[in-house]
Length: 174
Image: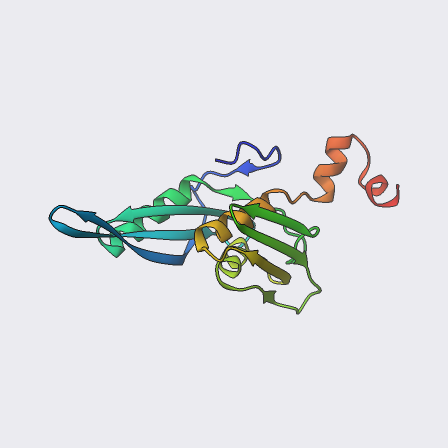
């Protein structure tokens, strides 16, 4: 799922204190010869609030099983996100489908300025100070994936220095 991100560090769920947050539940209808068949799809974000987060989708005939399946799916897709002093290392844009998300680091004490699905993802990651803007589609599935797109593109100064083979000081001072 995260193959296109070269710095995406996959994490195993063992030993982590993961909290699951429900982003949304949709009732879906399939019209058959015998009438309407209702089902549910749930999108869930799990995170340890210390830089590890994952998202999952579950579908079932009833809500509780859909959520349980979504949580299991989310635990299979955990990634580590760089967080510096409760905020992000730099500004980043993400997109998925018609959804566009812009996340911007903020000064301590700002809080999470984000709406809906973006807020759920950022809180699960453990970011305390961030500004964000969601544009385009407000479909929670696409907004969550756009937020993940932005988060997975984040890189901290240490990884950039290692990648370039230079000192951390040289990254900042040229």
